[in-house]
Amino acid sequence: MLTSQEEYLESGIHIGTRLKTPYMKNFIYKVRPDKLYVMNLESIDERINSAAEMIARYEPHKILVVASRAYAIDSARKFCEAVGCRMLGGRFQPGTITNPKSKHFFEPQLIVISDPRTEIQGLKESAFRGIPSIGLVDTDNSARYLDLVVPCNNKGRRSLNLIYKLLAKNVLKLRGEEGVEKKVDDLFSGEVSDSPGTDAGQQAAEEKKAPKRAKK
Image (tube, rainbow, N blue to C red; front, side, top):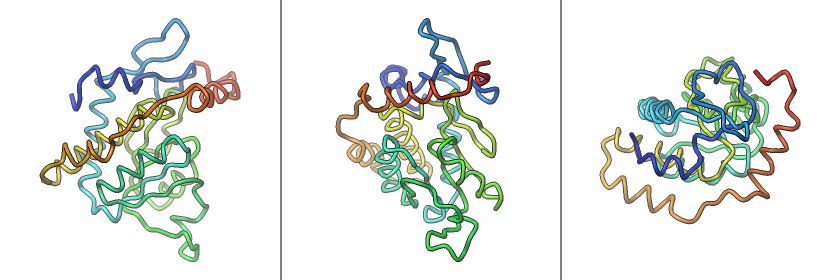
């Protein structure tokens, strides 16, 4: 594994929502008594590794990382700083990838999505342009348009911090860089918490809004 099982479990990377989509059923290990779906740690670990291998094949300045939600932006920014790729935080403006006349226009060779639901515009544009995509996908997300799914809790700060830290470490190692562990650990250092008033509260609200037919 890329890290210890204990670190994975402490981050909550495997804890999904109370909803599941057909796209994600193969990554689900069990359902907890509180009806939250739990994802398989081995699958998560394998997909993070696959994502790192894919990212390492591209020139850093040709990679676009999208993070529209507040709880993903900080971790995504640190990843981009470590790896040297481009960050798009906040709302994905229509035409960013498809309209050369847009002031936001950028033509990446690879796009990394932090949440397929809120960043669907970026996914659609990348698919239209034939740009490969990697997505951090929770149990309630669709994997449509994605080339590589990384199953995970994409709503928790600790989970996202660990995912982007592991991606950064492994991309840099695959590039043959030295001193990777210390460099990345220092960059991602600092306390990260999932407070009930932010991530957990927002996740619960989103689950209430979700259509009933999504429960399968």
